[in-house]
Length: 131
Image (cartoon, rainbow, N blue to C red; front, side, top):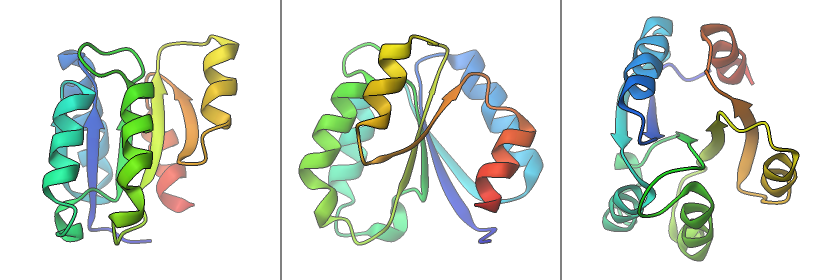
């Protein structure tokens, strides 16, 4: 397992972002975490760095319900340019929603590796890193 992972957290909840940063850094699997308060800022970052895959994250934790561009919209846009990225990026939806429709929708999007109901725990994060 690579211990020099870069993680992106796309979530508008500042408290959750703070908590997930602490959880992730406590595992020492990660060397960098970038965060975005909405999907549009994350899309802008991805598009600006299409030709620099080393700047893009290895793993994305994506919230569904956000202002401006939500998680579903982010995924739709991401699909339009993902082939231009010379890197395999794992995307995990992290949401407080337990709505079965959200779970079904996530399972039908090939870019989504898993659906995790918040909060992302230390144990769950380590499990993901071991995969």
